[in-house]
Amino acid sequence: GENVEQHPSTLSVQEGDSAVIKCTYSDSASNYFPWYKQELGKGPQLIIDIRSNVGEKKDQRIAVTLNKTAKHFSLHITETQPEDSAVYFCAATSSGGGADGLTFGKGTHLIIQP
Amino acid sequence: GAVVSQHPSRVICKSGTSVKIECRSLDFQATTMFWYRQFPKKSLMLMATSNEGSKATYEQGVEKDKFLINHASLTLSTLTVTSAHPEDSSFYICSARLPRVRTDTQYFGPGTRLTVL
Image (cartoon, rainbow over all chains, first blue to last red):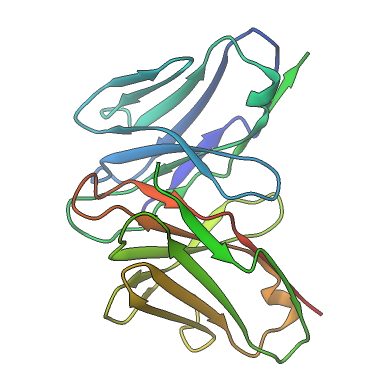
């Protein structure tokens, strides 16, 4: 089955700086890679996703890059703000009509220092 | 985005009792829903895939007789924790997948905190 590794486990950055979280996956059949933000006591919120037919996707201050050859993908948050503080999870799955659940990384606790 | 609700948000029960958790897709029909479990400060672990009108598919190591899943309609899936024990205490989260369009995108509910005394 799929195995997703996520680093770092904790990331502290100054407000306004950029944050980068990295993930690797093991199953070359995986073709869908979402990122979720989870605040304490709440369910995960989808913030951005990427499919294996593209190498980069951007949505305002958030971007995701995918390297299929190396089997790794990264989340980039620019101009960080205090409300970006949360736990971020990467995930992977192979879609295509099947009903596959997501395999999650272990999460990164992002702390934005004012 | 699509909205998924869960009920209850929090439940405390005695050991040996059963607890039912509901997951609803509010503004779309979901042929497939998923149930995850999350321990404190840990990641989400897939428990089972719930398919409307058919039996759920359980992940390895998840007891299907203990975690009963019913997906009776296109907007509702239920998870029943039977004969709950303290080790079943956890955060249970469901997700739903949009049918046909972007079939791989999952939207999560707010979660249910289960505490077994």
